[in-house]
Image 1 (tube, rainbow, N blue to C red):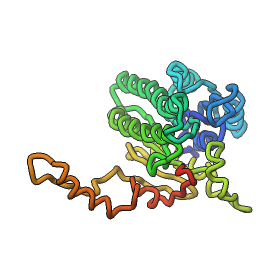
Image 2: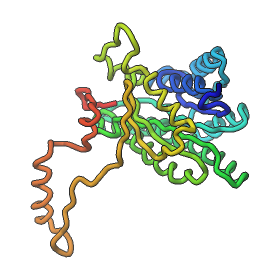
Image 3: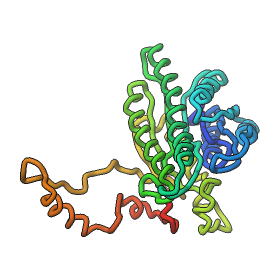
Image 4: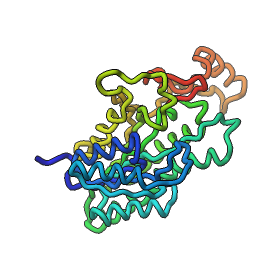
Length: 318
């Protein structure tokens, strides 16, 4: 009996632990050969000595279950190491079909306290890391398509966060990076569609090393699967990587605890037209001030309420 991803090769970044590990195992379970990428630093802030152990352990777990896998320990925030990652998939398994970008770090701080390095490091791993792997994967697919004169099979699944949707006061770097990933994904989806490649982005909610403090107040059940287990997220990644999702492109989906929500693009909430050649200060005051006076103070998007988010005391959401 054939599996949905038989004959396909996938890369999963940040796959040594947490969400990435669950996603790599799911893709392998569905039949894909998997390149397990993880830089292996022990600190969730990207600190500590890099180690090959996390990636190698997950690759061995896949092989022990009868699957095919190899470990890659490069840093996706480094352009050349991202190139090596894509090349390793092609060298090891003949081609690349699926790219799952998951790698990330946290360096939380309020915007008025954040250092330049705390900003740059998070943008580098999350946003630049997503770009680096996407760049080399998309070049691979474009070259294959041009060589055959026909579309190829390609899937990109990127990882954003509800911190981008609802705001996150203690994470300006993280929220900005995750918002940038959404923009990167929709742009990529448009650019690669003609080559047969889709690109989608998920906002997962799961209990991992990255979110252990966020969900500290949410106890694990005595029996059954934890509603915040990464295993709730992995099936959606497997679906988006599969032929069944051929018509799903440029989409943002929130996923957690047995729930998937499709998020619409922002819509215009209100429109005001000047009765003159251009707006004056007084006219804008007469139109906009009453409008905002009737809305909840500090409201940005309604996503927090729609998706049932809970905020930390410092305003952090994940």
